[in-house]
Length: 66
Image (cartoon, rainbow, N blue to C red; front, side, top):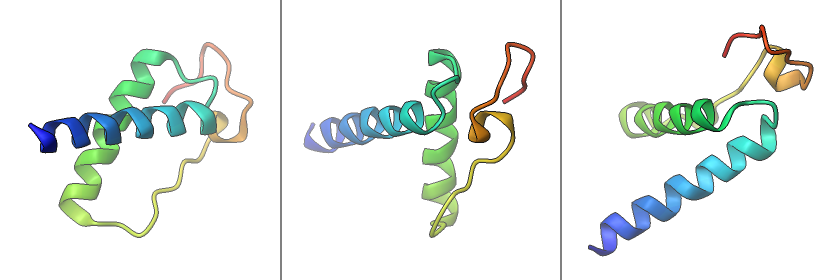
């Protein structure tokens, strides 16, 4: 149970950070991106993951892709 709670806390923190870094991302896309980041970290253990494009620059529009 403690592992599940820690994982949920970590996912929540990750979603919050993604929301802070990419504020124009929809809540649905934020959750999906958090899941992708978790899988990348588990599989590849990267030192960093960079976001780029209009969402990262802060000039995303409703037509911008993720």
